[in-house]
Length: 158
Image (cartoon, rainbow, N blue to C red; front, side, top):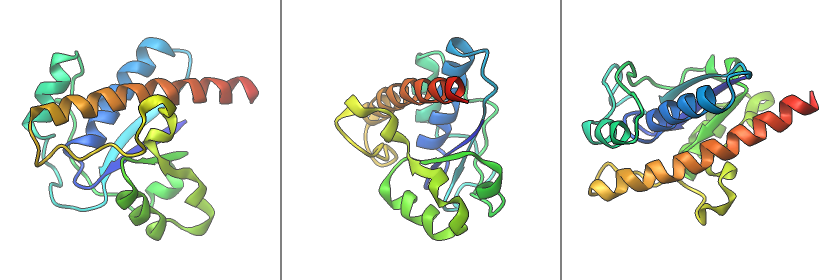
């Protein structure tokens, strides 16, 4: 299973999702073969590490983001990834516009996997205060656990 997490610039939400889900999957489902990556719909920060506030918040919870670098969604990603998970509706729409018709069902909102979250989008913390980065982590941790349950059910059914 190959999963791509997507936000706008690939320096806050989607690299957080990549780091968190990678850690959760390694800890809770080492038997599943899961590859993860992240990308942005805009190329504002290509090659840059995640935002320092994102790195600091993730580090406080034990997630390592040091190897991550921003990249933009490529046309080949729609064929390569089994799931492409957008952080919000704006990026979901951008992905649906770019996706070949036969791959659109792979593109979903990440918070579909966090039914108890009470929201459907991971808010962009970039222009807010430090609490925004903590809220992003809370939502992403919840969605990561839900996604892992979904993948386990899918593996059992296969």
